Image (cartoon, rainbow, N blue to C red; front, side, top):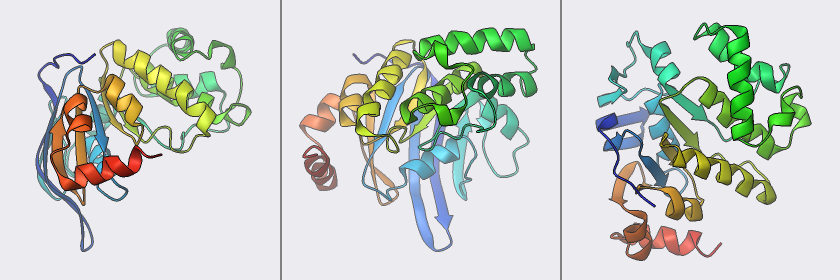
Length: 250
């Protein structure tokens, strides 16, 4: 069930990104509205992950303009730390601290960066562990958890930081097949809370169920932006049709 997003929280205009001679993003323009659930899909190497890594300054574009939550994002920005507080990121690999318990992984950001009192941070961490359906895992270490559980901890970590936007970079691609749905189910629930979400994924069932809009990229360009219903029923480009033909066969 799609809904109408609010005013743009991410605004990209004519972004270009190069790695040496490789043109990774080609004049990419995109708005993401407050509360929108945006899914970005496309073949490998199409620039999807590069784009969302620009959104929280893990990468920097070389030309064009980008603002996220009113913060101008560029290499010389002095507000990168504030940006990273506003924008959470859930990676393919879970990026948890292996020497810290789940609870410590969730409280280190709020206590060190946001200066939240320890007791308050722990209460919030336990609340969000409940939301991702692993309240009993707080005292375990990451290596004691399944991949699906670790990814749900990573989602809870972004929630603990009170992120305004959460970016997901192929969050299920490193998981065993039986663990994928447990993570997707949590993401569906999160979408229902009105969280602004930008999700790079090959999980087309999730895109159909949750996305307000689908962005299709290939070779560094946005080729289509449409509702899930229109994109899946009638992609407007040959590249889009070819991509769907291949991915929906699996």
